Image 1 (cartoon, helix red, strand yellow):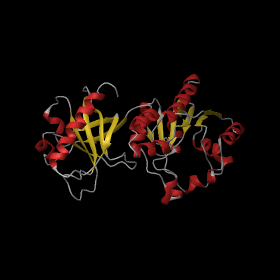
Image 2: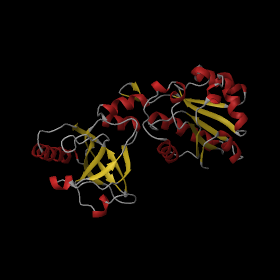
Image 3: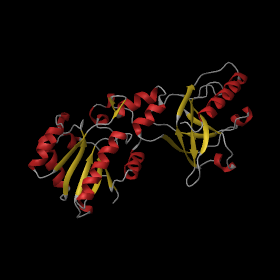
Image 4: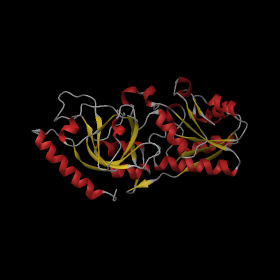
Length: 315
């Protein structure tokens, strides 16, 4: 299987029975993972294939662009995580006027007309569909049965007695509650970027850094994090990182960057421009702030490193 941009292409790609997991899947969090896993169970039991059907952009960006949420991941990251979670394929269909005009009762037949081997649908219990988002899970079951589709509804995952949701993760991310974010994601929040050569200011401070330019829509709180830096196929390295605008050393800096200081020995080429790296954000130490002097910043970095070392192996 592969990544498709239309359900028609999916329908033409195979004669096997298809079971669709439907959702926005922004973040591919613990609740989404339950839906994906259930679709795979049903597909395996019936010798079919499980495919995630989603959108590259949130439908609100088409319907109500002024209120569209900032996404936790772009379409390529989402497809990657969906496949890594065991899906046989992914459909990234653009939400457009044709899709917006599909009435709820016609939604299952709309899918079957384009995917002749469609056998079942799997959704979370808060799934909405059809024109004006008028359809709910009960409606989907009813309309699905009318055209011979099996419809499975998966209960939402809870964290601290509240539903896990993409919007809740965005809110926690924004205020630095990264450990809560990781619990709701069901994995460590990870930054992936290509290293960029900097001006060497970190080295002058005595704390050399690897610069990772990174501009997600849903940004985490600016500040200092503890995590693990890794390069493909190599053991991860314990590290501390600041994400933000570097107000003490760089006036007028408008685009945030992740500056990583590794607390273990690494090869020199880690900091070379273009090297692809990933860093987990495991714990949040403090918010970014502007210090009165470089010496004050240097003193704070030393304190941050001591606190990070106290967390080593515990996050």
